[in-house]
Length: 309
Image 1: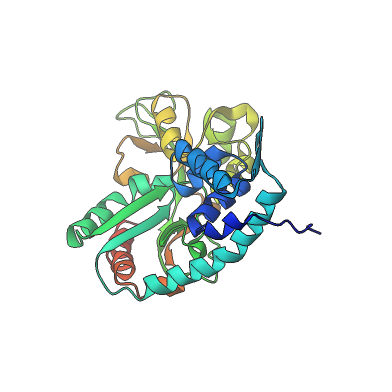
Image 2: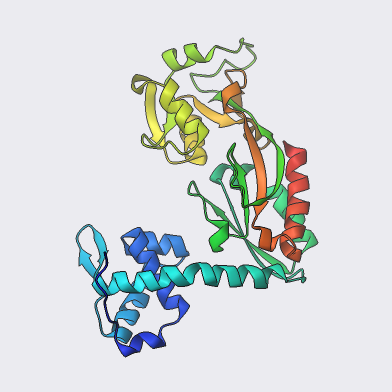
């Protein structure tokens, strides 16, 4: 049970921006983590937290060697921020949902590999058709929360879509094991070789895999279950890094097939792996579905991506 903490009168001069910066630090446990969450510079986070503490004349966080830990006053302020957060998000959604103009900004979240190899051409068509809409793309492994306005639109490879989001399935994405042409793991140029069983590939080839603790995606779990540690040559944080390492001849890697539209040097070593087949979705929050720029993006970009799958 929380002991009541009385904040000084200056707390009445706080605005929502102050509260969200404090809440971000409390959740992340560090300035750098909070800065990534809010897409600001580390120096901005430090300046904002110092300014809030100066305004309140109270210490909100203990600066420890392993991060920031909220004091009693900090915890009290975070409880207030958590109560305000859904109300602010709901208000923003309702206001944005009534916007009928094809202007303004759109924040789109998707996986790094989709952002780099599948989205660019459809996005170019959208930007040409709607030059007054500014699009911000965030490619990351972490999923942003659309209900909290962390993004307006999500493009996701997933078999598990939250019930509270609306949108459509764009198609199915298949995965294969690939090597890079000209490396020791690929057939020699001009020599045709039959595709190999996955069991042979995981036993006889060096692999480029992802982070050891990653389990959030279906391919993370598959790699963990099928590729033994003895076969792992190196680990990467995401697909583009894995591609660069594979291109250098370090090993073979699991890749989505759509990458081959942009990279002609990939040589398939296996058939598509059935249990990795994943739907690709374009999604938004129900309160934003009638916003003109959201609707236009989902239509133009969604249709173009559908044709590429």
